[in-house]
Length: 443
View 1: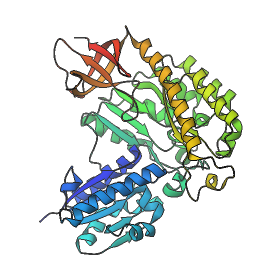
View 2: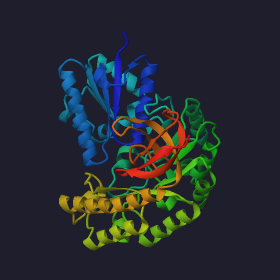
View 3: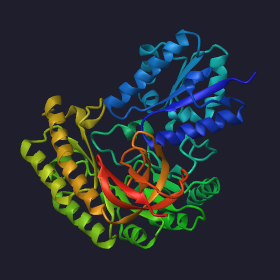
View 4: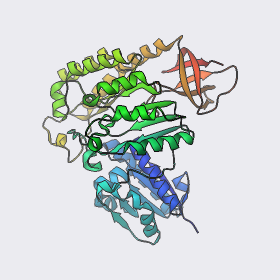
C-alpha cells in the first residue's frame, strides 16, 4: 500500500520551490501526495528560520500537527528547511514529537528518509548544503497561472544581521539554458506570470559566468511563448546595472516592478549592517530608475532599531522614505539572530522602541499608498484575475504593480461576461475599496 504525504512550506517563495521539488521526488518514489498534510500519514514541515517570528511560526505548526499525531491521525512528522538546517540536533531535543530533522542538503534524499521513518527509525541527516538540488522536477503548489523560478541558491553578501549565508551556504547560480527550459515547461502548463527569485537575484550568473547575467536571462525568458508577465524580486542596489535597467525599459513582458530591499539609508547604519551606499547614492539610483523606466513601481523593505540606530538616524530614514514615496514598502523591527555579527554589536535597542519606529514608517506609508491609488483613478490597468470575493460581491486579482502575498489586490465588477481565474483583463479604476483600487472590467 502506498503511503500518503503532505508538505506545509513556511517562509519565503524560495523555500516553496524547494518544497515543490521534494514533492516531485516523493511522487516519483511512489508516495501519494495529498494537499492537506493533516490528512496524510506523514507530514513534512518545510520550516523557515529567518527571523524570530518565522521560527515561532514553524514551532507552532509542528506542535499543531503533533496533536494529530498524538490522536493517531498522523503517523510521522518530518522537519526540513532553514530552521532544521540551522538548529539541527536542538530540534529533536526540543521537539521530540518529530520523527526526522533533516538539513537542506538532504532534500534530494527525502523519499529515502521517509522510507526509514516508516521503518520506525528516527532520522537526523545534515549533508553539505551544496548537496541541495538546483535542478529537478516540481509539483507546482501555486495557482496554475503563476509560478516562482529560483535562479540561484545561497548568498555571499554577509549582511551582519542575516543568517541566510550561514543557513544556505554560498551563492550558486543555475545554468541559463536550464532556466529557459524550465520556463518553457511552466508556460506549456499554463503559467502566465513567472516570478524570478533568489536571495540576491541581481547577482545571478556572477559565479558561473564571471559577470552579472540577469539582464541576458530576462531577455531570453521574454522570448518564451505563453509567458505574459515576468516579475523580478530582490534586486540589490549595487548590482542594478545599466544593462538590467535597459532590459526593464525595453521588454514589455518584464513588469515594471522592482523589489529593492534597502534596509536603511543612513551611511553609518548601512555600514554597520555590512551594506554599502548612503542616502545620496540611493536617491540617485531611484531617480535613474524612474527616469529610464517610466511608470516603474518600486518596493522596498526597511529595518528599524538596528543596533546603534539613533533617533536622528531614524528620522533621516523616515524623511528618505517620505521623500522617495516608494509605491510599496514593508518595515520590520530588527530581529536579533544568534551567531550573526549584529547580535554582538553594542547599543542594542529596546523592543518597544524598534516596534514604535516601524509603526511610524508604516503609518507614513499609508499616505503614500493612498496617493498612489488615487493616481490610478480614471486609468485603465491590466489585472490577472484570481477569483470572486463573495463578501465584496466583486472579482479580484493583481495588477502588474502587485506581487503575490506581499502587495494588495485590485477589485472590480463586470456587467458582461465573467472572467476566469488566470485570465488577464483590462480594468478601469474609478475608486478605492478600503486600501485597494476598485474598478470595472472593460468588456
